[in-house]
Length: 261
Ligand SMILES: Cc1cc2nc3c(=O)[nH]c(=O)nc-3n(C[C@H](O)[C@H](O)[C@H](O)COP(=O)(O)OP(=O)(O)OC[C@H]3O[C@@H](n4cnc5c(N)ncnc54)[C@H](O)[C@@H]3O)c2cc1C
Image 1 (cartoon, rainbow, N blue to C red):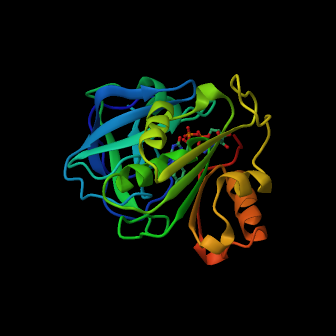
Image 2 (image 1 turned 45 degrees about the horizontal axis):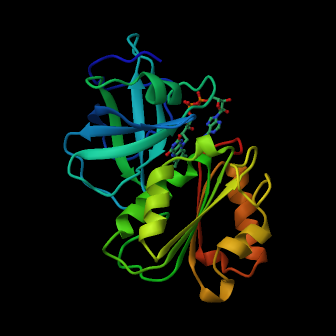
C-alpha cells in the first residue's frame, strides 16, 4: 500500500478498530533496525507518545493517496524510550499493511499510531514470580518486550519457548542467545516446525506437551504464562498448559491472526 507523506485524519474505510486514544503522527527512524527472512523491525518516532507497559500493542494506520485507510495492531517490542517505539512486523503474503511496514517503509514517511492498547496481557517489573513465555512466530514480539523490561530491574525467572518455521525465521535471534548466555534467570528454547539447524536433537514438529514439560515450568511452580502467536497456536498451547495442571487464571493469551508457524 502506498501511503501519503502526511498524516490524514477523519473518515476511514478499510480500518479495523475505531475505539481508543487518538492517532498520533509517527515516522520510521534509523532505517529497518533488524531484518530476518520473514520480518523487519522498525523504530518509529511518535510525537507525544505517552509511554507503555511490556505486552501492550499499538494500532498502526496507513493512508493511501486516494484517502483509503487501513489499520492493524502491532505489539510493542521494547520498553518505553521517550518518543521512540519499536515494532517487528512479519510479512504476510499479499498483506495490505505488513508488506508496506516490513518492506517499503522509509525514514521520513508518515504513518499514524494509536496506543498503547491492552491492559491484561502485560508484565510489570514488580511481578516477581516465575514466568513462562510461549511464542509462535511473530508472537515473540510482546514477549521480547517483557524480557527486555526485566533486564536489570527484576529477579523474576523467565523461560521462553519459541516455535518458528526455520532457523532463518528466528526474530531477535542474536539478542535472545546473548541474553540467555549472560543472564542466569533467562532460559530460551527454540522449536522448529519445518527445518532444524545442524546439531538440533528435537525433530521438526509443532509444539507438544512434552516440549512444555521439557522447557517450561512445572505447574506446581505456579508461573504466570504468556502465550502469543497465531490463533491456532495460542489455543493449542493454552489447552496443553491446562492439561498439564496450570491454573487457567494464570494463562494470559494474545492472538495475532489466522495461520500457524
Ligand atoms: C493484538 C495484536 C498484536 C499483533 N502484533 C503483531 C506483531 O507484533 N507483529 C506482526 O507481524 N503481526 C502482529 N499482529 C498481526 C497484524 O495485526 C496483522 O494482522 C498482520 O500484519 C497482517 O496484516 P496485513 O494487513 O498485512 O494482512 P491482511 O491484508 O489483513 O490479510 C492478508 C491475508 O493474510 C491473512 N492474515 C491476516 N492476518 C494474519 C496474521 N496475523 N498471520 C497470518 N496471516 C494473516 C488474511 O486472512 C489474509 O488472507 C498482531 C495482531 C493483533 C490482534
